[in-house]
Length: 78
Image (tube, rainbow, N blue to C red; front, side, top):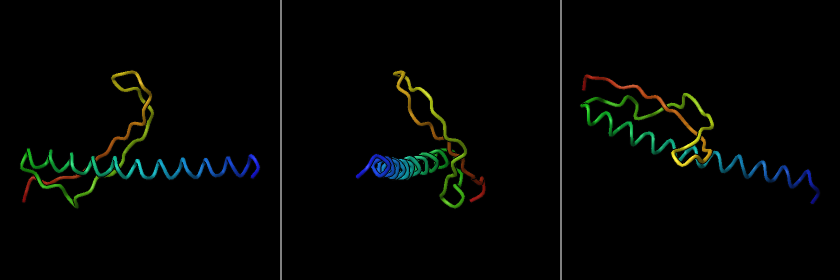
């Protein structure tokens, strides 16, 4: 296995990690959106969220993290 194969394998593993981590973050965003809508007596449309932005930012401890911002649609008529 040469260096190029190893680099390709590492890139594939990083892409897989990003995909799985994004699925986990999306599930958390859906549950947060449902909770917010339930608290305000609103209806979460399609039970989905959509990612609007991905960026790097620092958390409260100063650690560089991936920041995902999600948006969702809701209705005030049930």
